[in-house]
Image (cartoon, rainbow, N blue to C red; front, side):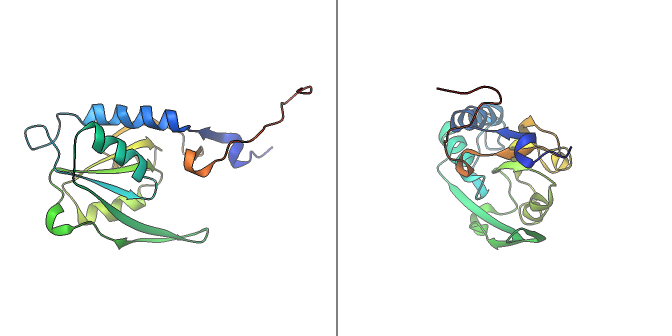
Length: 167
């Protein structure tokens, strides 16, 4: 029997995401090239925005920017391309910059980002095996066929139990 995506799913709550992003910040603390500090955080939109905000707060990084990469037209995967750059005069070659995303899947998005910021440190909260080589740091590895449900993709609702009835 084939499983539906939600049956091989990894559900991430806001609380879990916050803990994992803080763990990633702890891992990055003191490892920046500026006497252990980082000059900027660049979030890959949209999934990297929440963890980037948490990491920027934890590491007291005030310069936060975004890079937007489009790789889907509706639900069809296309060649990824940058549709919004961070301030490249400030970012330079990426030295001292933390690039943050929620997840690396195949690594294609990060390949494009690395072309523009080759010396940046790329960190994701979650990583799948195919994309791991594109990441310098991550917290949790999940299998390639796992679908991650992030808190911004979900709403709270009643779920019927597998057996019996619920009062």
